[in-house]
Length: 78
Image (cartoon, rainbow, N blue to C red; front, top):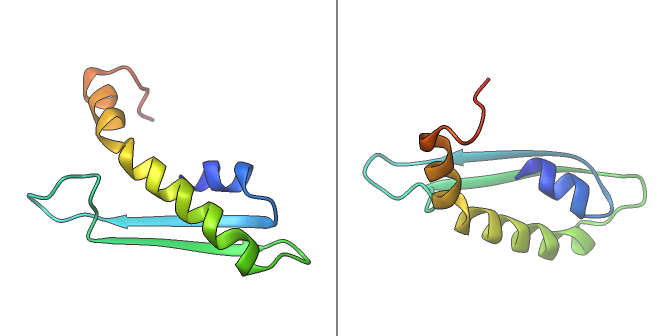
């Protein structure tokens, strides 16, 4: 998610994403989602907030597919 935001949103210099899930709840519905952004010089939060929200919503919607691929062994785990 952080990499997607970093590469897709102009004006972002650094991104960290935190997801905190709850036992028994779907992985795509985390209890807490936090995105920390360091803006590039001249960047403005008003310019990056909406694209970041859109990316996070899309990424969260794709989590069930990601988990399925991970459990099948289709994705490497380091």
